[in-house]
Image 1 (tube, rainbow, N blue to C red):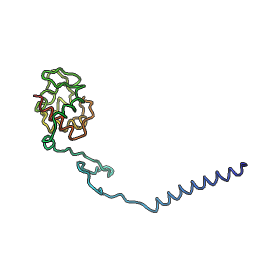
Image 2: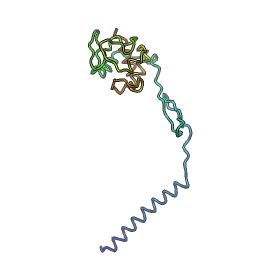
Image 3: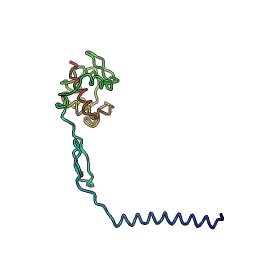
Image 4: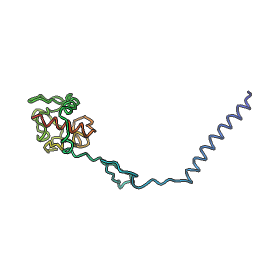
Length: 173
């Protein structure tokens, strides 16, 4: 095959590529698809709000009612979930502070109140008691719930796991 034949083949490939790209651009300019303003179906547990800046849609996550989940929570499964926490927290009465404070008696206790642990200023200023609702929201995404917390845990996304853990923490009295 001489160089002239190769040039004809290369030119044919380039012309086809340019035609495909050109036709794609022309079709995009002719057929514009408008995106719907509302979703086709609603996702349970996610509320949509529009931001005023550029019309972007921001999704706000809505947590499940923890009291309903606690009715069917499994304390034994919660003890297994606590293994994620055990690297930083203890679950025994009079337990020492590790990277985090001990979890004994945490339900109903005021946040940032363990005397032997140095809390972040954000958690110390939080000042609320650890109710099951507070624990549910905090354990979902700690850094989002209390901005500036030292707790580097990503959180527990599954509602059942959080409910099981909170049921287990409720037994530590």
